[in-house]
Length: 194
Image (tube, rainbow, N blue to C red; front, top):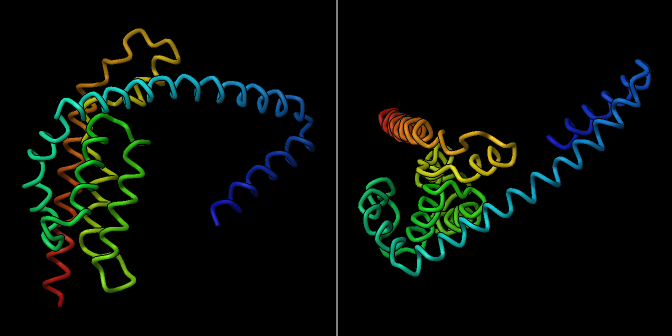
């Protein structure tokens, strides 16, 4: 459905430009934005490769195992239906760790794997409580170092691309706490209704 909406918006814009006499500006904007997208993508790839390398170093140094141990009780409290030795816990911890470092692209495959593992525990076709909680946490995602945003700011020659770290930490702590509170509120509300 979304594809149809985007296609319709593009067609309406082109038809409007034809009738309005601004087709040359539309063509110019298309080519400029395409070139800018390639430049931005290459810049982002270099930063993401750097941070993925840092993640590998942290993994080999044992930092990720340490973070996993620190967050394990928290994850087991948030996801009580998942057995403690189930692979979903490992994928959830990996996803949370990648999100901590602002590596959304690296966190996505682990998040998909976590959802698949949680789906294997579910007996119904609808989302389980764990899946809903994980989605809320993954969307709010506590972030310490917003690498992707820093990369975009560096790409556009920001004077101080890392000055957003403090506000990012505050904003993501608030959003994560809000996501947990809202998730618990609706969960306990649904229990009371039953």
